[in-house]
Length: 124
Image (tube, rainbow, N blue to C red; front, side, top):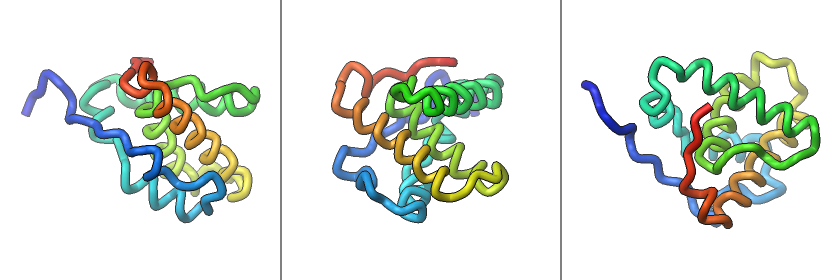
């Protein structure tokens, strides 16, 4: 079935986000519970693979550079979910992985506090 608009995406509330000291297991469970993959697959269509890889790479580079997450909360949630799926195959130790995932969640928190960012969905 062809759709003109992607499935609606509801962002979680600030209170629903894992706490700043959440464990890796808690962050993974949260990522699965808010998985926005279907929304972005419909939004980006044939460009999904290219866009998700580009988004993930931008986030990783921003994290390594020590700067703020470079996307609105919805895209950061997509990146979080993507990284959780990739995680077992990347060979990154869990403590390092957890720091990156917490950084993404911090970006989501910041974006949810800023209404101008919370509603924005950018395209890669």
